[in-house]
Length: 325
Ligand SMILES: Cc1cc2nc3c(=O)[nH]c(=O)nc-3n(C[C@H](O)[C@H](O)[C@H](O)COP(=O)(O)OP(=O)(O)OC[C@H]3O[C@@H](n4cnc5c(N)ncnc54)[C@H](O)[C@@H]3O)c2cc1C
Image (cartoon, rainbow, N blue to C red; front, side, top):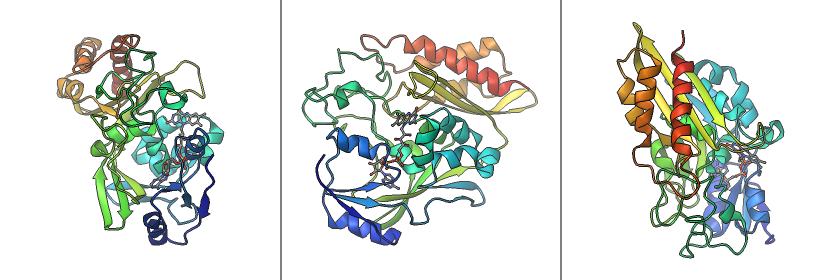
């Protein structure tokens, strides 16, 4: 691991200044991904700016939105009364991730900024455009069972692995950031970038910008569920997952929000499935017909075609759960 200097700012503004002052500085929150990346030699910061202790760990009611502090731990997100009442899918997704010990340390912002889990990203000596831009991608045509089928490019097919991000995408959350040029808000839909020709640029964050919070519109009137399929019961990332929230009026679906994990290079919203079901009465037949639309735009590789039927079944299961009265 490259030697680094640990910096402890006393305010948010000081944290941003410290980052801006050093070209190769990086933030550290819970450290559960950052330290792994440094041990693997993928992150090589000269300075680490420690943002714990800056008062960014609160969860608050801001009227129309629940504000999730960037430094709130995943354990707190999973159990907080405001989260459970107003944005329960946040809790449902977080509880399906990692382990209790990791959730104690992991934070809101760190979770949505965690790096991908493509094996070729980690193994030394492999070609990976995220690790070494322009080197090529050994996952394409290689071991691609875990890789994405949506939002891919000729440069990269890595999945964005966060469970929490699926709830935030379904709820249309917004990310509040501060940087050298002041504060701004990024719609969650635009926060993660599909790889295109520049897979090393993973988010809309600019140099030195610090996430302050993620604001989630209240959705307490919607029933929600998260279904995660993985290769073992705990300590495993999603092979595939679906999160959904719905509201029925007079026996028909009046509002529906669906997003999928384990299939996209970014958290994958399913608008075509949503719109096919608006004003429909819930039924297995309607669910199956709509779920079949989830295949639109899929690009399958050597070993991941199984994700298409699996995605349809997961969608039907979540729709069934959230429309049962
Ligand atoms: C064994 C294991 C299993 C796991 N399983 C799952 C799983 O099933 N599902 C899942 O979703 N996740 C899983 N994770 C990932 C885990 O959730 C993340 O490692 C964690 O959420 C990262 O949060 P952190 O606070 O530790 O971030 P850090 O590791 O501290 O930081 C991660 C990145 O975010 C940046 N960063 C952090 N905070 C900010 C901020 N406020 N502003 C700007 N940049 C910031 C850092 O610079 C760094 O680049 C697993 C991790 C491990 C180790």
